[in-house]
Length: 526
Image (cartoon, rainbow, N blue to C red):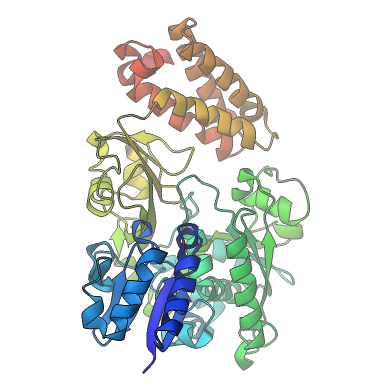
C-alpha cells in the first residue's frame, strides 16, 4: 500500500530546508523499498515547525517537525514498521489538526493551505473549490453584490473599506470595459499571508476574482504580485494556465456564457505600489506614483475604465460568503469587523506564523497564547501592528480587541494584520528613525510633505539622538509629523508619524528626553 506523505513547498519551508528533506525522504524510501507518494503542499503557517512532514493515517495526519535531513533516515526506517513505530520518533508532534495552534483557529481563507496540492484541480474541487463561484452564477450580479454588502466584508489590505460598496460602485458604471485588479504587492514588514495563499492555494484567489468579475461585469482580471515573490508569481501563472486549460477561465466558463480571464503581472519593487492608484499607474507601464482623488478607481481606474481593486485576502473571502451565506460570515468577528482576519506573528516571538481567527481576539491572546511570548525569553516591550507605518503598543494595551474600531481608539491600526514583537532589548529611538528613513526611501515623491518631510524628519531625529537641543528637536519632530499627517497625498506620508510619535510618547527616555516629554507631554509638544 502506498504511504501518502505531505511536505510544504512554501517559500518559508524551503528557506529552512524543505526541498532537502523532500529529496532525503525520496532517497531513503527508495533504498528501503518503501512505496510512498510525496505531495508538496502549501504551509500550515506554523513556521517554527518547518519543515513539517505529515503522514496520512486512518485517524488523520501525523506530523513530524521541525525535520532535518539527518533525521529522515531513522523516520523512514520506522515508517516501514508502521505509523505506531514512527510515533516514537523524537520529532513526532501527534495529530496535526489537534495541535492547539491550529485547533483554536477558524480557518476560512486558509482552510486548504497545507492540506491540498496547490496545483491539483481535483483536490481543490474535493475540498469545496468553486462552490462559491457556482453559487454566484445561480444569482444575478446585483444579488451577489448585495450578498457581499450584507456580509460586512471589509478590505483586508489595510483601509478596511466595505468591499461590497466598491463592487456596487463598479457594477453601476456603464461598460463595455471593466477590470478586476488584485493588489498582491504585499510589502509591509512582518506580513506574509498573501504570499502563503498564492503559493499554497492559488485557485482560491482566482475563484474570488471570478465572483467579483461576475458581480461587476468585468471580463479581464490582473494580479499585481510583489517583485520579491518569484515563487508566488510562478504558482499563480501555473494555476491560471491549469484553470484556463480546464475551462475555468476564458470564454464561456464551464458553458455558462460568462467570460473572464486573468493575467499575472510582476511588480516593480516599489512599496508605494501597495497603494491602489500607484499600482494602477505601474500596471499602465508608468512610474508608480499616487493619483489624486477623485476620481476613484471604481469609476476611473485602469486605462480610465471602472476598476475593482482589492487585496488578495479580500477576494479570497468571497467564495466562503457565496457558498455559505452572508449570515454565516457575519456571525464571525466583532461589531462592524465581520469574518476572520489572518494575523501574522513575527519578530521576537517563540511561535512565529499565521493565525486566522475571528475579529475580536485580543493582542494578549495572539502574542502569549498563540505566539508563546518572546523567543529570547525576555519580557515583551511592545508590538507594532499594521506594518512599518503602524503604531507601537505596550503590554498595558494588549487587552485591546483586534478589530478596526477598537485599535483606532487605542491609537493603532490593523493594516494587513501583521504583528511584529519586540523584547526589552529593542532600541525604540532607532525604530522611530527607521520610520522616517523608510518613508524617505519608499516615497513616490509626488507630494512635498512626504518627499521632503521624511528627509527632514530623519535629519532632525539624528540631531535629537545626538543630544543636540533635544527638547527643541522633539518639538520640531512633532510639528513635522503634524504637517505630514494632514498634508500628505496618501497614507505613505500620512501614517509615517504613527510609529514615530508612538515611540516618542511611550519611550521618551530612549530619546534622551525627560518623562514629561512622553505621553503626558504629547499635547504640550504640539
